[in-house]
View (cartoon, rainbow, N blue to C red):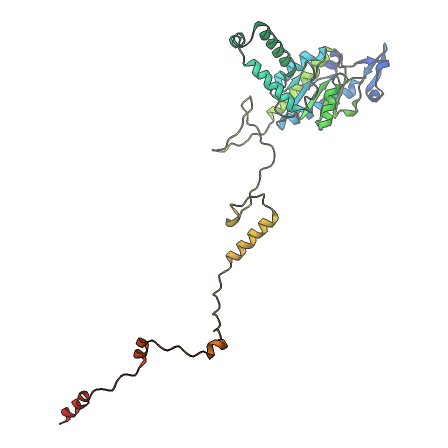
Length: 340
């Protein structure tokens, strides 16, 4: 990150403020004096505040954050566009569209329209449109490119906003404050530093001063990009890369998956508490050993069954139950002959 001395700020005209009758009393602590009805800014306070702002921007870039450059006045357009492109950050240099931050969803639709028009070549324009309609399409493409060309790669809200001339970019400041986005800005003697998180007291009307601010912020971003931590890549892990080929860190903390019982693995994690309790109760009941069933008690006969006579046995059953007949006389005489 290049250090900027007080001599360089003097040569760029950073110390010149607005006319004394157009001043903002909240900038009184940063005014050195008055000369030829112009306020002179105290550069002894500008230099440390400038370094503090650059350090903040460097830390944002080191954490893979995005800084949006905003400067739509004629003195800052060229510097904002060139330096933001050099460090690979989005920028707005033509006109701030209302809702660029607070209504990003609609802005993305306009960016999609811009990409759709860019996909049309000359041959397609001649085949699908008349000469007048093709001229209107080209004008629409040029208008969208001027307004949205710098933020077409901004997929989400920026992590910080850098503004040159707060009075001219009041809408951008209000949108950033509404969304809680930190704001770093160049504050002249006619502006209020109350709504700025990181201020640079200085001239915002000189072209050389605007180039000095934008170049320092871009250098700080490039310095922060060099300090980005490396991401270890696994063998089978998919990692998204940015335009420069560096891996993009995933936002948020990794989720720790708790061990799920075997019976609850097929159950949804978003089940009601009562359903989960019933499932756990069933699991505990299934885990207990099954008890042997108790023997059934003998059933006492009723009075009617006791009084009723027993049914007569069937003939075959009666014959089986009858006593065996006595042995024949011949069988009884057989032992007697043996004795004789």
